[in-house]
Length: 100
Image 1 (cartoon, rainbow, N blue to C red):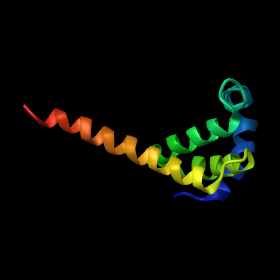
Image 2: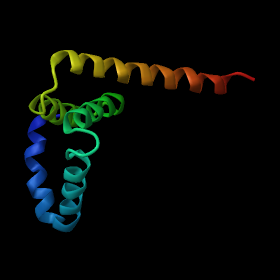
Image 3: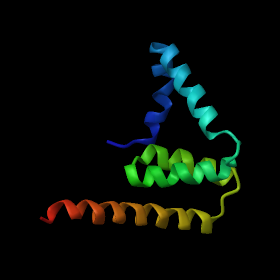
Image 4: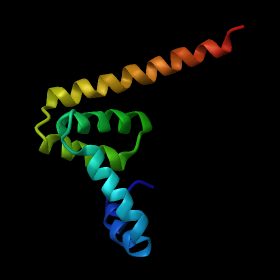
């Protein structure tokens, strides 16, 4: 189902729902802008979330944005393991629901 070419369909969605898409674009821009947290770190956070939600579109978009913001290969690799640890921790703590 995943096809990177689908990203080219976003302008069609904007044409069909311009107000909603404009609101999303404004939110996305504001959320990822430099602030108290630099953009590079926000992009690495976005990658960690994308890894846990397993969104291939987000992975591609935010990988490119993180690299453009100056993220190194080592930072990308460490981000992978942050996501791994959180998913494993979630499985572990949810496992407590199986016990009496």
